[in-house]
Image 1 (tube, rainbow, N blue to C red):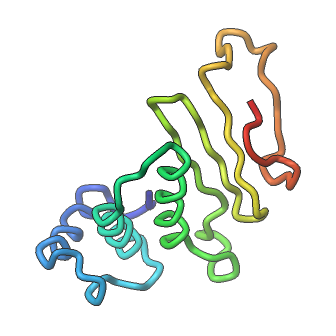
Image 2 (cartoon, rainbow, N blue to C red):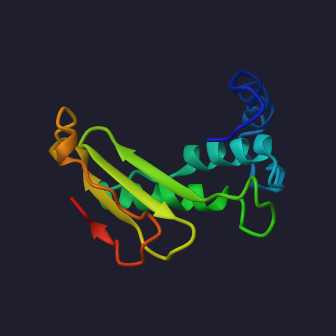
Length: 133
């Protein structure tokens, strides 16, 4: 989710906010990794139960978008893309921050033992939208 500090330190920092029940007024709002981690963890705890696969991705996207770093604020740390993986149904979702579309594929249909079946895509192509399996 974030680069630094180490995961154990992220969890220690998160405990401070969890002891306060992740109250919205107490959450850190800056774009530092520690703050973004805390917000993401607290938002995740408050998500309603999704009714279907599309809603699950949408709800998770609402968190990821909230803790992203905008382009222009920091070129080296800006969020370039967001990905979501559905391990149960074998879907991989990709959202570039440079185009207004999201696309996905069913990775269970890919023959990873056969490199000839691979294809290359431009993940920032505005024509890529929806299921590209």
